[in-house]
Image (cartoon, rainbow, N blue to C red; front, side, top):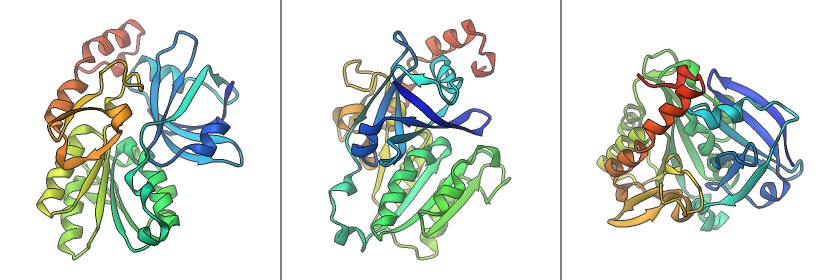
Length: 286
């Protein structure tokens, strides 16, 4: 069984868990994800691998309560176990194909929106360990929703915080910080944006303006996680791709974000109905 070794509440609706999964801990790579189930008949939930500890045989996952299944996961306690944990799945980040010699001369900018800080962390950590220059922007609506600030500060050269309401860091959105950094003369070989779909869309538009290459992660589109359900279909450079098997990371310039956001909204009525039926009124969007 896949025991929960440690559980921590990061925000009112976001939790971190260390799960015993030794094979994944030994073989997982930045950019990949795993699938968990809380019971024999439970929904399959894809979650990005946030960190791995091969010695302890554990993997770290970060979960935001967004519906009934994620609510059930976050209600599990230390010592409880998942029925299934499958992985690692998906393609590793493209930089995993580069040599340490190549990476040490490169400069990366990561843009994390909200819970997107969790999948950004293992990538920044790996690149930093290889000697690459790593800057990270974490953005959220308010200071209460900023996660992994302390951990991230240890695996990057510069960490920039911004909030919509100005309660922490710079007041504004992540694109404001990107514009400022470029205006100050910062140079990056490439960038990575992970977070809400609309944030990634505007981050890509901002990056294009500065001729800054940008990779995005479409992990939020995934449902089944194996390519069989087809729910994560997305147009990339005019071709149909599946976020779970062809990604989850793609060239942001090539992604049809408007189509992706329409697809992401397809199951909202069913999600709302399930939340209402379960009495999770705080998750029902008005």
